[in-house]
Amino acid sequence: MSADVQLIEISYEESGARLDKWFKRRFDGITQGQVEKFLRTGQIRVDGARAKSNTRLEEGQMVRVPPLPTKADIQKIKEKRAKEVSQKDAAFIRELIIYEDNDIVALNKPSGLAVQGGTNTNRHVDGMLDALGDGEHRPRLVHRLDRDTSGVLLIAKHPRAAKDLGDMFRERTLKKVYWAVVGGVPMPHRGQIRSWMMKGFGPADEKERMVPAVQSDRGSQHAVTEYAVISTAAQRAAWVALSPLTGRTHQLRFHMEEMKNAIVGDPKYTGRREPMNGLASGLHLHARALVIPRDHGPDLELIAPLPKHMTETFKTLGFLLEEAGKDPWEPFE
Image (cartoon, rainbow, N blue to C red; front, top):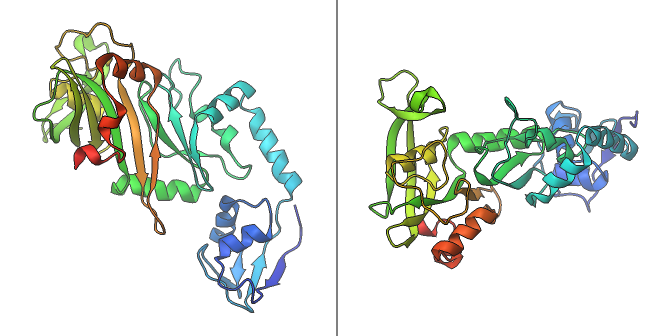
């Protein structure tokens, strides 16, 4: 690490630049996460005062630059963290990336892969995140998907991104669209499901699952889901778009069973319909799209391709992707 503190005067040519962008251009190899940390701790200052990443620099201002890690330092940290993840797992999780920038990584999580560890779960997304790090901060999960649900999974690259995304999830400013194949056809074809739910158990207490509740029940939670039927296979099955307005455990799976249209392949929320033969195995629930609002410029739209088993089922039932339109929100309009 460089041991010297520097004071650098802003030239006319550099004036008007954002502080964070100026810093990263000036010091190659420094990440956004590192800049944010220096700013939070007051190590980067402008004319002796604390500053923010979006501070616009003016000619003649003096920027305090703290001792910086060298490229060799950064490389050593990356190599140390990478060793904790096997080469096979590192390659595997990188193949799942559908979008990446300085703040986030978006994965298309496959069905069957757990997001976090637990009893008898040794391989999971959280255990592979070091392979996506920049050497300064360990990437963080900012939301969850069930093990058997596929689709868009967001990872924050640094603490500031984790906080911003966490706030968006809590304030529900992020738009989420799931696709599901369900038994039968929901009626009406479009609507909103509201209910109270709580943790309980299935028959003979063999499986933890969500069960119906009332507001006065201890531990009950209110859940709201918007749904829209995109296409049907006679009255046998339907392709449905789902948008959870709350984020409860198993919310979409519970709500579709409550509608008497359980999701195909769901082992917990099976409903009372006869199982449909001839369809691919596996839970037919996919986090299709996630829209992140941006302060400047258009919103960021992340879309995850369908998993293999749902692609096969779409083909069997005659569903065409074109029926959903180009905008993930079109079915709800």
